[in-house]
Structures are given as C-alpha cells and as structure tokens.
Image 1: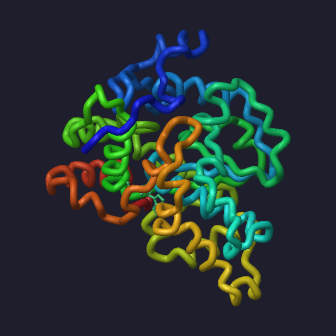
Image 2 (image 1 turned 90 degrees about the vertical axis):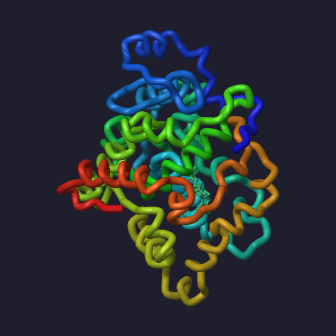
Length: 329
Ligand code: A3P
C-alpha cells in the first residue's frame, strides 16, 4: 500500500497547540499514534494533540440549539455516507434529488456537514455559528462522555452510526496509511491491530465509544438514534424512513409515491458519490484527498485482510465488552 500525502491534515499537525492544551497533555496518558507520533487519553478516549485542542474548545464553547442535528460516528463507520444522507434528507424540499445542481454533486459531504472538533473548533476557539440556517447540521466523532454539555441539555437530536469493528478496523488501517507522509512508510496490519485491540485508536476504545451511544439510545430513544452501517446497507429504505421519522421530517405518502426515498439513496450511493469529479480529484480544506473517503464501501471486506486468528481476537473482545448489553455485530 502506498502513502500518498505530502502534508498532514490540519487536525493532525502536532506542534502549535495552545498553552491550555499543552499543559493538559503533559498530565495525560500517552501512546504512539497511527499517523502522528502521539495519542493522549482524555476522558477515557485517545486523541492526537491538535484534535484534542478542538475537543476542548468545542466542549467549552459549543452552544447547541434545540433544532440542531448532530451526526456522531466512530471514524470509518460511514460518516461520509451519513452526512450525505442526512443533508439530502433534511434539505429535500430545497434541493430535489433529480436536479443537476444538488450540492452533493459539487461538494464533498464533509464540506456540507462540518466536524465540530476537527474543523470548526480546531483552529478557532469560538467560531460564530449563529449565522447558520436552522436546522443546523454538524458532525463529530466525540464519545458520549465528551459531548459538550449543551448537547445533552438541549433537545437537539443525535444520530449515531457505527460499523462492524473488523470492517471499521480495516478501513481505519487503510485510511491511516493514506494520511501518513511518504517518509513515515506504512503501518503493518499486525502492528495496528494490536493497538486497536488495546483500545488505542482514533477516538478509541472502539467498544466504549459504541456502548456509550448504544446505552443512551436505550435510555433516551427520542434523543439518540442508533444505526449500524450494515443495517443501512441491507435495508436502506426502511432505515431512511425511520431516520426521517426520528428527525421529525417523515416522508409523506406523495413523496413515497414519487420515489423520494430512493432518490436520496441514489444520490448518496457509493457508486454515485465516489465517481463524482469533486470526490475523485478534489481536496478538503483540511488537507485530505476527497477520494480517501471512498475505498470499497462494502460489508465484510475484513475477510480479505484479517486472518481467522485476527478476526477471532476482535470477536472475543466484542463478546466480552458487549456481553449483557444487547448489542451485537
Ligand atoms: P471502506 O474503507 O471499507 O471502503 P468514514 O466516512 O466514516 O470515513 O468511513 C469511510 C468508509 O465508508 C469507507 O469504507 C468508505 O468506502 C465508505 N463509504 C464512503 N461513502 C460511502 C457511501 N456513499 N456508501 C457506503 N459506504 C461509503
């Protein structure tokens, strides 16, 4: 596998963090990162230093509004897809899926739905978000315990998507290798699997991240909608309708007759998005190639990369961590 980057995304650049962030970091547990040299454990989860700065600012300053929608994922669980889907869903009366100037045709989904801690708050301690039209749509990889208080105190909605840990891991391994600078070489699968299993991955431990939102979705189903990538792949129409109901924008019978559900799924499909010029050749302002977010988009690709023994190792951790929770992959 080739590394392709000549520079790191902004949220991974390690020097140049604030004094507040530097002094916090000096007290935190530290491990070697997948892309940059160090990850720090803050509130039980692992972050690179610059990202942590974004987390702190967003925790301090983000004021959720009642009508906000927050998309939360573990990295490589289908964030790009979820952003495209929810953006199209809530804007479906503004932009018909059949028109040739739908924003998704000329913008990567990450432009249309910005990350809080990786984009809006990473370099700006308190960005002015008041000019955004309602409902505001944001995304984050923050674990439940690290969400800004205002998210929990308001009636804003949280949509969580996760994915089979073996596919998430393979996708993360491939993505991290794409982000690494040429001179860093690539991470071997074995090396990073070991870290992943010890919980040391971006926003890991994976299991704790998923369980945080799973448990909250059971306690507070009006607040947190829990979705798996595999479920969305298997029954996309069913889950898109459920998502619309959850967000208070159910499809009317006229819309169903006119194939509005299918229209959204088509424009957001892997085949459609990954073949658009903007996603094949474009770059995000944060520095990543847009194409890095579209690899295979399949369920079960882990079988092409993990040995039976590696898969068993991940499965055993899942069995142990999810025992009694009702959650299965
Ligand atoms: P693979 O690496 O397994 O192909 P994220 O968006 O959270 O970074 O996750 C990226 C993963 O979602 C990648 O998985 C990518 O190919 C897949 N993906 C991107 N767009 C998708 C889409 N429209 N439909 C389904 N999967 C998609």
